[in-house]
Amino acid sequence: MAKKKILNKKSLKFLEAYLNNAAPTGYEWEGQKLWMDYLNPYVDTFITDTYGSAVGVINPKANFKVVIEGHADEISWYVNYISDDGLIYVIRNGGSDHQIAPSKVVNIHTKKGIVKGVFGWPAIHTRSMAKEQPPKPDNIFIDIGCQSKKAVEKLGVHVGCVITYPDEFHILNKDHFVCRALDNRMGGFMIAEVARLLHENKKELPFGLYVTNSVQEEIGLRGAQMITHTIQPNVAIVTDVTHDTTTPMINKKKQGHCKMGEGPVIAYAPAVQQKLRDLIVDTAEAHKIPFQRAALSRATGTDTDAFAYSNGGVASALISLPLRYMHTTVEMVHRDDVENVIRMIYETLLKIKSGETFSYFD
Image (tube, rainbow, N blue to C red; front, side):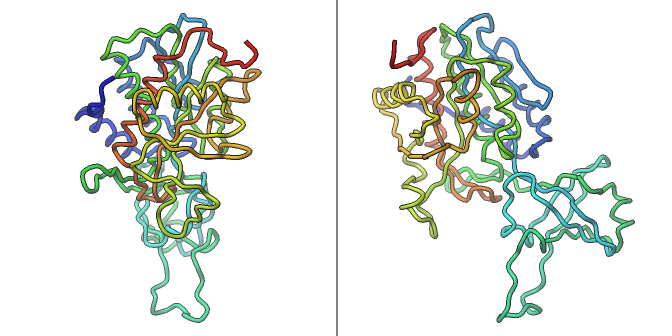
């Protein structure tokens, strides 16, 4: 495939709508509906499961099955306690960062609709400079403008309501995408674009392709653990985000070197099947797709682990998108990296043969 721009106006319109929709862990279905509507022209059928993972299938009758996967959920908060004076205390739903919470606007999702609130914080004038308290999970709180617990509950807010940030998609300096939840709705977006390109370029694959958007990754890879047993794939190529380590206060000796704009990151880890990874590397080199490498030690911490160790072992690999400011509301990725992840997965799929085991013992 020639190195022309992959993303078009329709792609970007979908991306904006998909990112701006809230899809917290355990409540992903509205986002999944948007994703399935976009993917529908490019696949033959869909599989869904009880918890909300969604799979678009190309060639569903094929015995050999290849997965390309991202995850659909975003981090959030739960209402945990409502004080007598109407303030709301929270617990995490996924890896929500308590340090960014103060002064953020929030949406509390209730059966009556969205209730707006703010994470309050004492004014600088009232805090002790000598003994200043940092934001912590047990001292941050939400104010929705109520003076009593009864008034809060009258608005439909109760323990267990999920809380998200409303920050929406925008583009900085022409090619830097910024939004909350780029981790990892960018993955769902990129695999959908792969399916679009296969359809538009009239590529016929010698296997079944399962374009998989899993739920509940942020709380332990749970959606992937469930859907892999439904699909029972032979091969899985997973995409997620990884840290751009070139911003301040990140130790490269510990985190490695990764820079946004310099290409997708190919993972080295025990869960990554080496011959599959070699195919991805060889494909990238053959098509002059820039890439970086990352060593991930015992586990990748992504859905790759769930696929790799399922069903007696599935040949799995991980291609990551460099991202700045993970688990904040201003996550940032570079358009070139997005397009190169799409290109890398697309070209790799065209190299996979039906029945290929990637075994070193064949």
